[in-house]
Image (cartoon, rainbow, N blue to C red; front, side):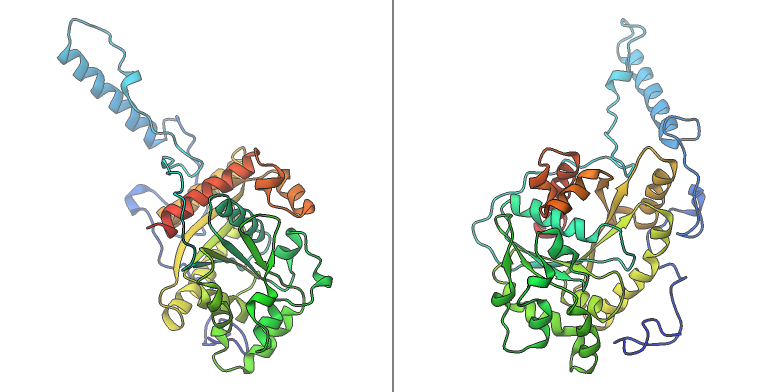
Length: 365
């Protein structure tokens, strides 16, 4: 069975869906599971089984002994207050102190980032809209690319897919159409959109017979690189030719991942695809981060999946986690980002935090 199916630019024999990619794993002595897809027990913070609690107890004891030795006149001094306990985020790691993004005077030399996951409903479109809006709030000039035939990104920004005269399909397939003719402004200052509709589904079939079919999107996006700081591509939920085009055109990949067991298992195939694109088509491609979405810390399952995600991917996982909230659905119906629809909501703050982390990690290195 082919990895990608008939007509796919890779082909090859044997499916690697069940294989786990080489990722960060804890040492065997740490008691972790053998495979990424294995469930893991959840250790409740503060319990006797939590190694962090044992470490904190030992640290308190050592400081107490040092205080008694240094100042025996003050017996029973409370050393607990002197132990600086780092603030742990939802990923179980200390939250970083992210700086406020610095303003920039000259725009251009955009970093192209794909939102990619072959599983649908994990928050790719929501993240593309709201991360783009948050970056625009910080003074970055942003272009959103709707590269999904469903056109959800365009609809989520208030466009009617049936009223489009030109879409990214025309840009891909018609040599006489320029990118400036297709780009439309959004309601967010500094953020523009390349819209899409169902016509794009025909491009995957028509591109099969094109020369350098995997570089088509890269070619049409090239003129926009000099005008924007960030280009975010919302990929379709598959690993077909359109997604390979997006990965070939990108500098980095952000993987939105629903904090649910099946979503965690499916990342292995995506990692294999990214590795193949990096090896054969785009050596500069880099996984910028894995983003936990739809997280509910009240459930044991959500916490277990988050812990497993950090064990498997290590520091590649963003410290920022997007929690479930009805405000995301409401803002989609309103056709605007949550940063403007519910500016003071927890969801808006989360995407502003993610924008800071993306800028610190990927754009201002």
